[in-house]
Image (cartoon, rainbow, N blue to C red):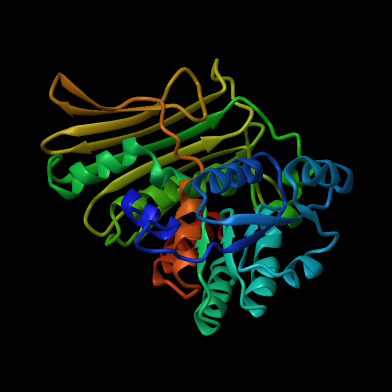
Length: 343
């Protein structure tokens, strides 16, 4: 969303819009980041919090002048216009449906649902109740990827025939639910790879993927049942109907000599482009445009991209709580995930 649109939603001397009131469900580090971005933007007011860790929630609410609500059901009865959901993946579907049934707008961490059927159910509910529903595919909002998308759309790379998307981390989460399929819904592919698939469809929205080959493994051994085992490494080859070949790989707890390797490479007949993290950072990125051996820097840190999607959602909500069909793009990603997991 253009900054001018956000400023208009915030209100000017000529135009004043209402400031939506929000509740938060879950406030781990991602939730805290999104809350800070919303507060700094001033497009919405965060008034309530529900978090299962009661002691942490009580102190956080006291420090941030929030109402500490002890159940999600009670949160949805609060005088709020929308809810931000930052909870374990497998809980999203039920929690989104509960909020939509109350007429609340929803901004949810990815994914909206573990399966395509789940995703379709929540999108259908949002459409039926005419509620604003968005998910947090945050890498779309990085300056580097936006500039690369602009180049591709302008045919500066020519025909893009290959894309390599990588997201490896040297760490394991300290949250036990990450390793329980009943809560996580999957391993590193669900946690990290879903962003890679979303970026592919965001940059190339018209492609279809007839061919998929993938391997999921845990501690170096192929997993036999993705519904019962959590993968820590995934590699997939996706062939599109236009011949574009995408290779994606992601992993947890990998020996990579740094915190993370996040790198997206685009190869075209007229040029190439790369988006990569700097010094192992999860937040700082550099992007470049290539012509043969020549390179042009497109973007450098800093770039405050993490909370932009939440701010965009709140700015739309400030105007009107209504369904927007852009969320349906999540279905393409869900379908690919189902096919890789063989669900």
